[in-house]
Structure formats: C-alpha cells, structure tokens
Length: 154
Image 1 (spheres, rainbow, N blue to C red):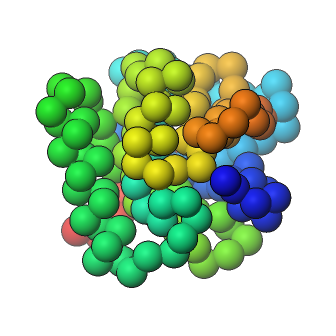
Image 2: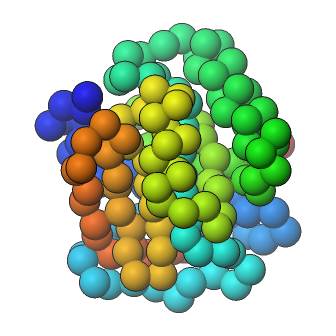
C-alpha cells in the first residue's frame, strides 16, 4: 500500500507521452476543474500504468525493464493500443517508464495496475486527471494542462 509520501508524489507527477504520429506531450496536474483542449485523435479515457517498482519496492533498472516488457506483452496479447509514457515527480529525480492506454475504462486500468503490483494508476479524461488507487478506494482528481515537448533523442 502506498505511503502518504508516495501518494503525495503521485499527485504531483508529470507524465511525458509519446503518441504515435503526433508530437511528444507533457501532461501536468493543474487546479481542480481547470483543463486544456483534449488532443485530436486520442481516445478518452486514457490510462497511464507502469510495472516498475511493485509494491513501492525500488528494483534495479534491468528488473524494471523486464517487468515493463511483460506489461507491454500483455497489452499486445489483449490487442490494446498503447504508447510509451514516462512518469516523474518534478520534486525528485525519480522516474518510471510505463504506457498510455487510450480508450481503456478506468476500472480495467486499475485491474491492470493491480496485476502488475502497482499502488495506483492515472486516469486522464477531458474533465480531470485522477490518481486511482489499485489497493483501496483512494482517488485524487485535479485539473490538467498539456504542452508539446521536444521528442526524446533516439
């Protein structure tokens, strides 16, 4: 279960998204009720999930990347579209690689996160940016803002 410190970190997280065929985007929390223009071609809701550091236990990068591959393999087997997403707490150097899954209902995103040992997932809709617990009924909804960022070097 996430600690209060973990939960605070989740609520201030910034997510970098790499949608196919479009610019790289940065999703940031904003004041409740304040949202931006929903991006063209993105199916709502959008769930962001990772398989890194299950149960808040920090693993080696190699172990986290293997867990990430299992998550991606599961999404591929299920035929669910997804693209890279990286979450980070701007107050720390910590980051985690994950995926954005467009059109996935929130309850299925929570189930997916729970299967991969996660304390929470992110649910992005035109109306809000919500951190949803995978272990209890906890939720935190804020507004959101979106901006274009330079694509990562390949």
